[in-house]
Length: 105
Length: 243
Image 1 (cartoon, rainbow over the protein chains, first blue to last red):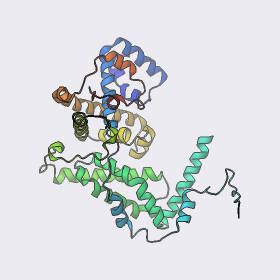
Image 2 (tube, rainbow over the protein chains, first blue to last red):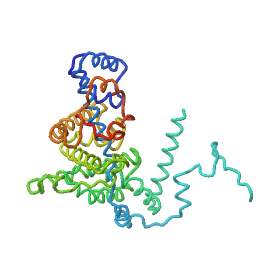
Image 3 (cartoon, rainbow over the protein chains, first blue to last red):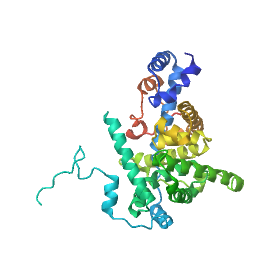
């Protein structure tokens, strides 16, 4: 594979998205080509710099504002137990779906 | 097999949440806001042209989510659906910005002091000196600014991959594009970002202690599949950059 073909693999390589044969071609080429090796390192640095920014923190009052905006849509108060049961359907049950025995009643 | 079982479990769990949302459960909406407002804000902040619009855009997104909930029938996952609405809304906001503000507002985020970094702990070394902290902040601002200059659709692909940590498959689903297109957009986005940052490093690198790697061959050998080896610029005392 020539330099142009190898350069297209740098980014997928950083994400672990190259096939076995592409990986072998990449490794073989980079051992012999200083320019590609340097270009790949630069691509990696760029990716690291971007990833190091991390998630952008939302303003502290945004969640509250969204609740206000949404309040007409969630007018029905529900019991916390019902919602917990909805998001954790196996709560209180074993892996077979049977209700766990409650001791000390 | 275990993965399949957990996938089915997650799907059933999501269906139950959606049913609660459709029924107008206040708790379900609180969960939805708590779960998604932060990542959606982060996404929109990085892809609209004026980051100060991000909070308003997020409100528009959630309003559409709340209004559209009764029409959502689980054709995709809840996350994919919400991200699609967010990207659509951000694209609308970008179009609006170009029509109304592009001529009147100079895009100079550093001079305007628009970037604040309350979430800066990822680059901060508690033992660093004021100069080192200043250097890290400088780099962070430069990277944010360079990212703003990466053209669409490459910027969105880059943000979803490197900042939202989505897989190629998730990105393909959210953007409704093929895996090959995802790969190519990320490649072109990273390349564009590298070119934008190269000028900055040449210009102010020596003042801020931004170092070019001395041995590019050893760097190349280390470079493995490396999302997990990102300590490069954080572990050491110097900020090492060479895009």
